[in-house]
Length: 435
Ligand code: LLP
Image 1 (tube, rainbow, N blue to C red):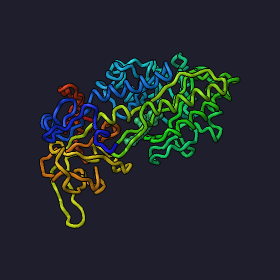
Image 2: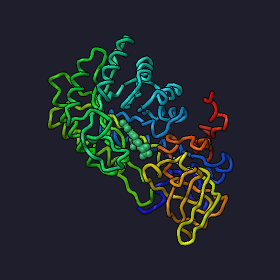
Image 3: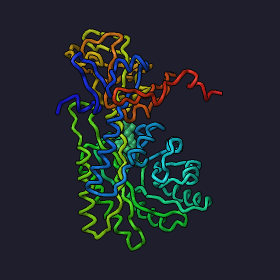
Image 4: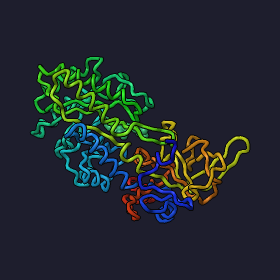
């Protein structure tokens, strides 16, 4: 399906005049009202994706808990939506935990990940009654055991293992291989030692195992191979007292960024993971653990559309035509960091035929600040609003104040209404911490 629908939010439409709308709101009107750059999030897509994960996994494997990976983007308004949809949260910092808490999120459904949680973060998490800490190192096993003991608590944990399986994605976002800072490697024997240490820790209760291979993963086979391998590994510790109550194959589910991409569906991922769990558990006589999955990108990515306004245009005959917009690597570092590709749509000329090949550059003082290279657009003019779909995940959450540009606002749209859930930063905001 070489269609733009692949990358647009569920509620997006391009009308007969070529006007893009999202959630029943015209993109050019949103750009006018909120200024540009602005990130528009389609509430229907967010909720549909949450429901798809919950229903597809639970249909095949009742009791599956879907945890939203907050690192893809979180704020209090969104945390409340995820809570309404019955999801838990994966957090990776005290900051993400603070957002969950501020939103009144049930902290027993929060899982704390990360390869180097600080003592302060672990103390806060234990004191607040976080559901699980996903322990990632020997250092953390000791630290958390001591912190839980001092708090007079027994902390539920998962141990993150590294199965040594390559999911064939960008090197920067590959995690489950042997050369990785994340997790206890099964190959090196670290995972074995970690499980023994966790089982023997007085103030920790080992509830299960976690792995995460990388992101985005367009193949099913790595999930199947790793699920099988980790379950076999876990079964080897039954006699030593490992009761695998919970099992998490992480997140990493892919989305389409360009119209030609066709990632597996949620049902495909669910089928691959659950199918492997069922057959391996049966073969080993292992009782079926509760399944946890941690989608981030696949929930919020397709919901987001970034809107920019075109300013300067520089045509270098025979070389390249640079069309500059009022955002760039400060709000979307993904092209610069991962060579990520995006579609670009002219928000007000959506059905005009493409007349030129242009490169969309940002406004930051770096030549590498390019959002999309050599894409086709209807004739671009200063003042035009362009839309970059599939921008909901890891763009706003990785945004910076580089060059002291304020980070953009976030607008939630639904049924013809728009709601600002994060305002644009002001110059004063950017100087708030300067003393
Ligand atoms: N669980 C764990 C332990 C993770 O490390 C991650 C992502 C996820 C779940 C969620 O993965 P997702 O479903 O969102 O693919 N900044 C990069 C992606 C980094 C992913 C980090 N971990 C990007 O923009 O592509």
